[in-house]
Length: 193
Ligand code: GRF
Image 1 (tube, rainbow, N blue to C red):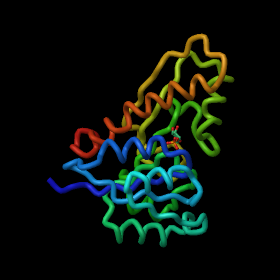
Image 2 (cartoon, protein in one colour; image 1 turned 120 degrees about the vertical axis):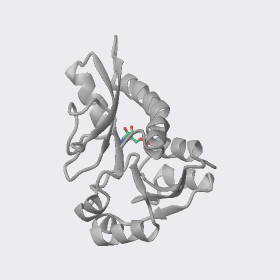
Image 3 (cartoon, rainbow, N blue to C red; image 1 turned 30 degrees about the vertical axis):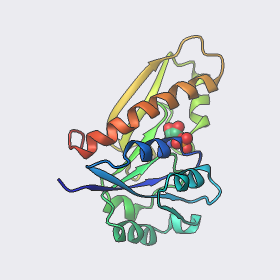
């Protein structure tokens, strides 16, 4: 079986990116070719380098340049792109070239609390303010509209006696840590498409 070449795009803390790097180290079915970030000072950059991962840092202008980004990814013969807290909109050229090959995790049960500017703590605060009795995470392919690509999987959790959005954040991040490698493994072995 061909070994899948994976690129992880991340802009921030990188807990998901680091978890995936560790989960797929010496994996027979896939290799993390590089981590790409648009922020040199993002913690994910130093954390990924510390794990021996190849890191590419690009500017926001380059992140918006569809031709540049598509060329960078295709030159590296990437099969699957994983967005792990990547905060730039993916250019249309790359989405078209990698249709249903760009995976994103969103920290709510889409379509609830999705869309432009709905990322990270904004989502947890929206869930909290809505008084939702449950929340969860959504794994979906990326298309041209924020958080509207085909959903691959969702995992939910009950919210009881929540007194602050950070409590939701902690539950959600624990779910991401548990399920992100599981979903990527399912894509690698073809049980999720
Ligand atoms: C995650 O909570 C994920 O749901 C969202 O961005 C956040 C990234 O966190 N896409 P981290 O940088 O992986 O810690």
